[in-house]
Amino acid sequence: MVQPGYTDDEVIKGCLAGKRHFQTMLYQKYARSLFAVCLRYSNNTNEAEDLLQEAFVKIFTSLKNYRGEGPLGAWLNRIVINTALSRFRKEKQSITVEMDEIPDIADEDPQDDLFTQLSKDHCQQILRFIQELPTGYRQVFNLYIFEGYNHKDIAQLLGITESTSRTQLHKAKLLLKERILRLMKPHK
Amino acid sequence: MESKRDIFEELIKDALQDMAPEPSAKVWKGIVRRLSWKEFLRFDITNFTSNIYQIAAVSLAGVSLTALLLTAVIQSREQESEKKEPPRQELTEDIQGQPNQSTDALTTEEPVKEPVEKSQPVLQQAKHLEEPIPQPSIEITQTHQIRYSITFRPSPKYSLLKTQYPTLASSSDELHKPALLKDEKAPWQINLGASWSWNRMQIPEATGDYRYNFNTLGLKANAVKGNFRFGAGLAYQRLFDQLPYQINYKTYDSTGYIFNVHYYMPDPKNPDMVILITSKETVYDSVKHSTLAFTSGSYDYLTIPFSVGYKLLIFNKFSIFMDGNATLQFLVHKNEPVPALFNSYKSSLSMEADLPRRKNLLIDLGAGLTLEYTIFNRLNLIAGPSWRWWLQPLSNSPEASKPSAWGIKAGIDYKF
Image (cartoon, rainbow over all chains, first blue to last red; front, side):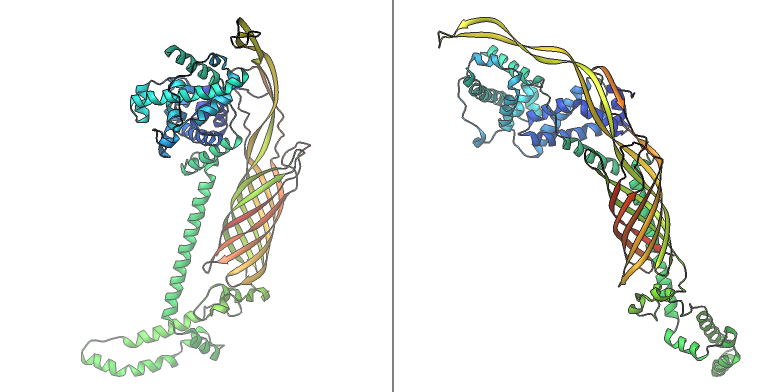
């Protein structure tokens, strides 16, 4: 019989000592949830996997900076998001969307009770719609909806104005609603 | 409208909240590769096993540099001494003209007298100036030194020395001439070498061959006589193996869904139908899991290779050897990690390890070719392919089979 499990603290200590075995454990515990974050910030699965790889290398090299003040998962989440944002900045993908990238969006906000039928069964399609959003829309949308940042924080983080952040979030939601409605209507 | 938007945001968030897709295996491989490189660059002397390659690289560089410097110093000294001497051809003729003359015979008064007589006018001049100059004795001493050193030169019958260490008298053709091949009286010569080899291990298994790469680093001394060389050394190698673990646990997990109908209303577009307003509820229950997990164990061996080589061919500065090896491998350290498991969300967790016991001593037989390139007189670069066959399986498991490996080696060799 082998000792079956370790606590987070033991795993962190093992990782800090450079033990590959503990690094594997940390990866296996958090890879899936962090990969979901990477998928939301990327255009496709390959890009998300590259991002996850880069983020985990940063995690292992900067784990000594984790002071244990908050949950480890939240700290890891922040590293993944920072990595995603800095990566897009490096790739010079402008936060403000290029003109030819902006799709036609109806001015009116589509209202439909069909949205209430959204469930976890639709997660793959919703994820695909988010990935298809223009980069700027996608980043603002993710930061606002999933990470809970306000527009002031988003503006500081992305180097844009608050009003740009509001506009991009609004347009991102309109785009998503339109696509989700198109997805749901055949089932009606 | 604002509240509608909030509902939409919440719905989206809820839909993706529990999404946890599995990234592909290449992600972790990439992370390990990048971390290994970072660790390689960050040298830690306290962690010997992870720094063995750095230590080896530094040692190899040190040995190479020392060998280069030694060679350069010896070469420059030889050149200096050659410059001071008259052309060797003439001196050899002198010796051949007086084959039985000893050193004492060469220092008889006859050759000395002549320069003394020639220097008489100079002495007279010196007397005139009242400053005695011991000029004649200098010439006598020089002559004596030249003759004396010649008597200690290697005998021409030792063609090995003549071939290996070029002198002004040796032509470049003569330098690489394989005169050694026919000389039965060639003296023993000692070489010391450092080498690294990259190997591809193959372990036959019922589910398919298990293959991985491993490295070997080592030092080796060779005793060379004629075309044969006999070697022994000390090396370090790390082998790997797959470790199976049977894992059983229970989780309180989702087993399905139910739809709760809260109310219904007539469909305005189709009066015959009703619209059901439902909520979806996930049903949870205790689920038993049983899975087989593998981890990769690493095993460090200190090895003692013995080898016999035969020089097949010499051309210009290249030589080709055929080698046969037998290597003793002593297990000095092992690392057998358990699978990564967390207690969270799991109950009745148990893990059964059916790990085969690794053998402490392994023996393999090998064969290979070595291409040797002479950089300087004493320093050679070596490279070539090798094949190794283990005489027994690596562990005591009845299912284990004998592995084999092919590899490529590279290194340096210094001739003393």
